[in-house]
Amino acid sequence: MAPLKTLPILIVEDDRDLREALCDTLALAGYQALAAQDGPAALQMLARQQVGLVVSDVQMQPMDGHVLLREIKAHYPYVPVLLMTAYGMVERAVQAMRDGACDYLVKPFEPDRLLAGVARYMLPSFPGEDVDVVAHDPAMREALQLAQRVAATDATVLISGESGTGKEVVARFMHRHSARAAMPFVAINCAAIPENLLESTLFGHEKGAFTGAAAPHAGKFEQAQGGTLLLDEISEMPLPLQAKLLRVLQEREVERVGGRRAIALDIRVMATSNRDMAKEVEKGAFREDLFYRLNVFPLHMPPLRERPGDIVPLARHFLNRLGARLGRRGLVLSAAAERELTGYSWPGNIREMENVMQRAAIMAPAEIVDVEHLYLPSSRSVPVAPVAPAASAGVDMKSLERAHIMETLAAVKGSRKLAAQRLGISERTLRYRLQQYREENDAA
Image (cartoon, rainbow, N blue to C red; front, side, top):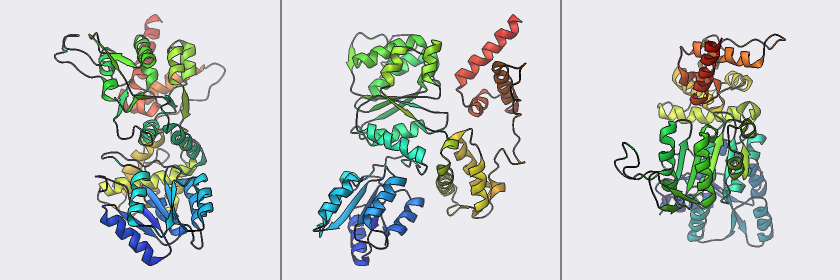
């Protein structure tokens, strides 16, 4: 039987009868099958449809299976490709595997062989998770290829990048492509949990360990047993707790707060940060030994402005997904809207893109989404916070930063949450900056 929830499988075959037979075989086994009669049709379908596996014939016109394979791996490196080849063409099939094919089937083959290949190679899909990672731009393709390569190992990964660049999405992508895919993926945002609760949240606690600990509690490390633990915004972790985290990572065992028994761990650890961690170490805000323990495999997520080739594909992806949720399928971007999106700098990265497309899906009166439905800050419909003036001889960067923060706060009517999102920093960092400004005013 097919999994409870699976992505569609794309069949690429120019023989109509065989194409229909393959689709019927998959449908009878509980899979959803999509069909394309040649390579160009398959690429068009991949541009608008997320799939879990491509099963393609090799001998096709005008684009054979080997060319199609290279195109798929160039634009969708995470999508597995299973080739079907005639007897006597096995040598080329072996070369195709070197080019990125996951396997090949020699024609004619029994339905069971096809279903076994599908079960082995197709991307998993879990309820409530969006497994699509848009990677059309070379910068993002390179990052994703590195992620897929390290996913097969248990190496600790430190993912850096600005807020909203998709660091957690890539962490989940690596988990799904690892040997731990069937086990839990547990994420904890180190900036979102108060310091006095973070230790017990991470490591767990025993009954009576502190006031309010009415029952024993398994922490995030234990909850991730056998799977992957993501420490999101690790740079926000207080220094005293960093020392305890280092010991857990070194010893691969955790002791609950108030407990006396060490619990052995079998987990893969990833961490993310929107800061320059090396500079945080230099400032003394982050332990050097912990940094090197986490930075086994560094992975940087480029901001959206540095991956322009992904802007329109991402916009289409969000528009399709959000439109479907609103009961508005078939929404499309006008050429002018696409140019407007490409010309925008996206300070809020992918998170901002999702918000913009949600507004567009709501505001567009018909199927065509035009410039006036985007409500980008560059348009007259959306008020923009004043931009800080360029630095001059009499103004230092610290003063400009303070002015920018205070102007952003004023623009969102004092909401620290909204201000932090606009500034691309955590709420904890914003609170720290505001406390600094208060102390400077008191000293003056």
